[in-house]
Image (cartoon, rainbow, N blue to C red; front, side, top):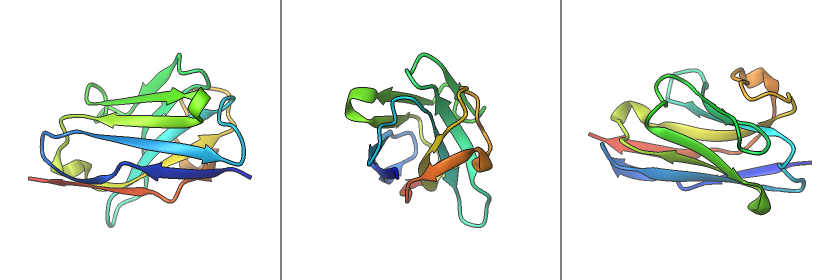
Length: 125
């Protein structure tokens, strides 16, 4: 069993930055592609970014490219999402997730088998 715990969310002004962390317990994340998703009130959960098992390959939704950076430290069993130039429309609960698919570009929620509980990100205007 894998437990994923996100942290680092909070309230930030537009233009500010946050770094989210996702730490796993129970089993290593080292062999798996990891993803970040977000869900705003009244909206479906949407893909943000993914990273392959060794961090050599990443993929971003269009809204995240150039502003967000996904990375990982397998020694710490942790995945990060650095978010810069935040906008009010980035306000959402952010989730990390693990997929067993051995590729980088995994954007569908149904392809992820373990999820964290989420961390709230609120961007004020």
